[in-house]
Image (cartoon, rainbow, N blue to C red; front, side, top):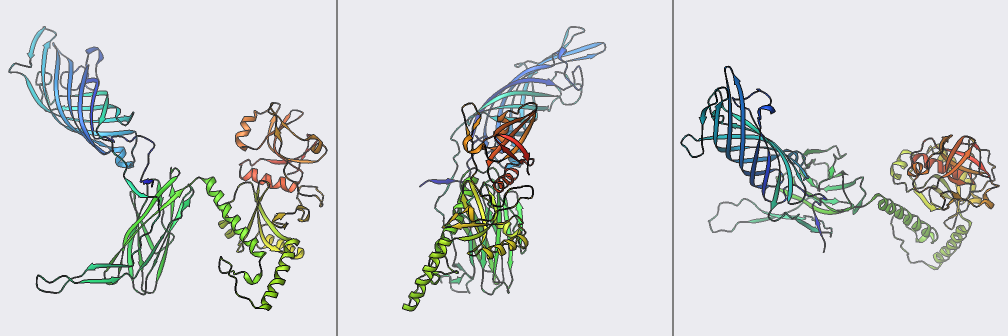
Length: 638
């Protein structure tokens, strides 16, 4: 059975292996007593000298690592002191132990290829120095490696390091260190305070050892954990030492359910926690444990407090004596989550009035899917509901139950069977006659916000969705009488505020256009007897132009959606195609103007609905409807 991982990163995290070795090289700059300029290096005095080092260390996760470094340093300085000029050359070997702290991972808590370390430590240094007077060409001091005058000193390094992971085992880095030497003899002569120098370098690290593996969680199979009872040890009375402890069983007075949807889109989802008790006061808390990228929000339940501590999401609640249950909905936002199945866990505790504590612990899984699959699933569910309702309308009324999803057939007497047979015949005749509905909206894509739409327009009944001809049509109410349908239409326009609603006719689940109500346009001069037709989709030829059936369309008055206008110069089609997706684009020229349109319609109402789609879904707010005949632009009608 496949296993689920808590996190799955597409990048190689820094320091997934424990041990590393490294090498770097760079330049040293002396900041002690014998120096040409006090605050910046002098290139002409050769104050920039080479340096190199070897490193060996170990990382402890992505935040902390330690290392030991062996460094070779060359230093040079010149100081003009009238009437003398001093110059020194120093070669030093040093060994240091350092600690490195990754600020980025500490603040962000996410593995990244890039790391920013602050480092410091301590070390010991041995060096030789040649100090000369250039004016007199005399050697003032000559410290050697083997003579008795060699110098030792402790030093403290302090610096920063930028590291970038090239692969799971190799990284490159830039390091800048300031080294304070606890001695004034680094330049061969005691002239002031302690000497110091800086070292800037580029290097590379190689990580070795076993790479960390991501721990497996549970299989994909969902499960819930409920606790009906809990046994625990209570205090015992004084008894002989050998007497066994008394165990008391306490019935759990709480019923807790944790509901997680099986699937959700990338926009987020809701989880619900239901807590029930039986006539006792209680209080408790729980925390949500979710993968990285899941962001729980505060709950609308005002009796529950929410606390966010870093990546800990905790909720506290109280149930008074007169309250037997509480419902806690929690919305979870998603950030940069790919498709997949993820765990959602809850843990906490609840306490009764006697101080007895009962655990809260649940685990469940949710599948995050793409928006297209989610919308298709919603559409399928709505279609299933509509099919069930249409199927129920064809059955006898006595076999229907409005309070249950299943139809239960009861035993009937002979008289009841006769009534059922008459009802069946009547329903069959009604199905043949067809029904009227009130259409309130039509879209090219599934509309997923029906709940808020119904709340906004005060709709309590069911919204029926019919899919055909590339459209999703949304209807209200059902009537077999045209006069009643007229009344329902006025109700929808006045009470629900949907002023563009109109009557449509369905027969055996199919929309019959010639029996529907013709819609009037505020800017159109179309006849009342106009019939609805499908959109005429042009076909694209090899030359890139869109061919049409001239025999059927040339002599008709057509409606097109104009999306762009070019004056004197045509607009490249590829610039417009990105804005309209797969909709075919047609180009027409009238004098100096180039017009670009999508959609070809014989009926103004369908063109008007498509215009609404273009403005809302394609975000082309300046689109308009224009009349065309014989491939010539007549006028703009909307």
